Length: 126
Image (cartoon, rainbow, N blue to C red; front, top):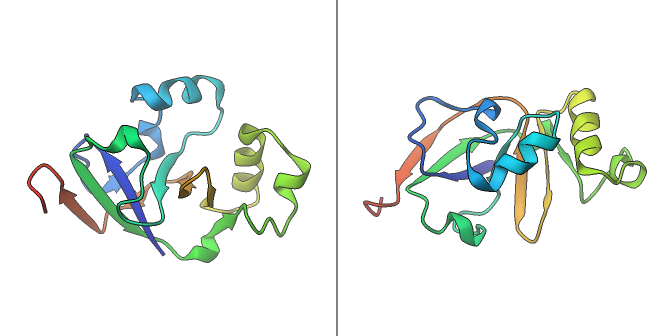
């Protein structure tokens, strides 16, 4: 499965959850969360408006089976835990690398670093 990450940061090698909270849109979430994470979109070009000016598009790949699907919720994690922070903690505890779902966009969350497969410089148009 391909994962797409937009950023103004020039990452080398890996996208790491330890960077979570460095941007204004993730700073508040980082303060209330006990789980560091990186966000990705599942479709290229499908992103929230505050990434419209992002300079880089990073592409990574991961087997979908390594991600917990919130929409299917086969383990009833979402059904039993409504708080997103508790859901992140439980999914990570159960051995998943992250999760996929929808917040109006098909997206994913990773709890561990992931190797960058490709990077596009959006300011240059490639």
